[in-house]
Image (cartoon, rainbow, N blue to C red):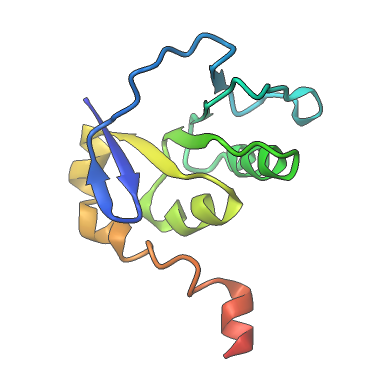
Length: 127
């Protein structure tokens, strides 16, 4: 079972489409950023995080947003609660984790980082 993490907390997965390579894409963390392609028909992109120490997915998310992707962007895999604010700042809308991680890092730990816009480096500089 998977758990979806959003700014409001844990939620059930409401995505009903299929990852068909057109309307929904699955990207590996080692996808070449120079070859990322999507179309106006693409409504969901899911980026894999094989390890919490592998930050390449954050770069992919940022590049997708800079290239104009406006659809749903999901991080999937080994993202930990401490990385949630970074995931949101880089462009992800939500994070997909497994039930075991959700049990080890309960919802309150994720919600504590949900005010990601208030606690970034630039906000601290503005004081």
